[in-house]
Length: 136
View 1 (cartoon, rainbow, N blue to C red):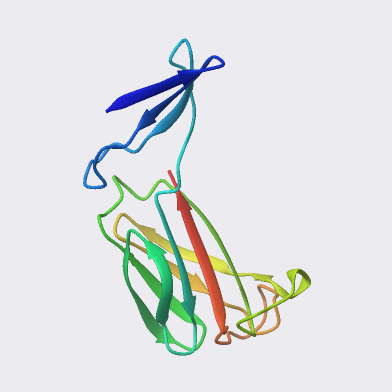
View 2: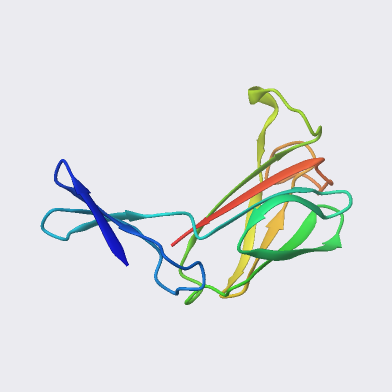
């Protein structure tokens, strides 16, 4: 990996997406302050069709509002953070985006649940737009 250094921040430049080590943001002393997104996906919940993705191989629609996001390559372990949200329409306004519940985490997949009315106690429903982002 190469490095780009300036203003006391060092950023490692990724040379190959096949590399297990993603770029990180570090100060001039080498203290790590963050990493880039490991995986993301934007998909249609009704058909489980992917619109855009990075390091996501497929979506499995287990049942209404219940999906498995399959990652490839796999993450090192299941100790990662997931941010998920969605909307009943494919072109929502900002206030129409609802949080999605995150279920089981595995190194190669994560379960996502989309509540019918945007609350975690509600029945599940297929969102026209589902966004999932994974950080580690």
